[in-house]
Length: 159
Image (cartoon, rainbow, N blue to C red):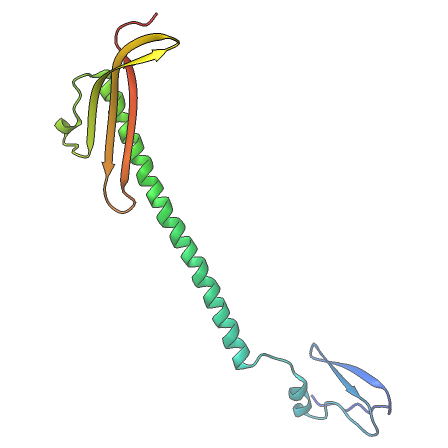
């Protein structure tokens, strides 16, 4: 579709062409859009360099975000492993308190140690005799560590 528009000298004319506005200073016997070449000259777009720069920036942002997500995933795995070992150490502590002969090594649990030490505490000026039970659980591997629970069990009845 071709069209010709004659302009009046000294005026600015705005003519819509397929969603774009062409602004040109008018002069004697000037015409707009006489053929398809006039439309292509005024069409705006992105150059290949601009597209490549935008793609490079997008790749950098995505790489940074994926690094953060990966780091968060690893931290979540370590926290889950620690939580699981805290739970297992607590179960060992409960078993050691309820059974004075409890030994986790009998069950094949080599990463847990239970120790019992006679101990006395002074509470409100009174000496209380009892046993200090300590459960130490070591968990190996990435994010490994050690969990230690210590609990004081009173011997006999307390008034």
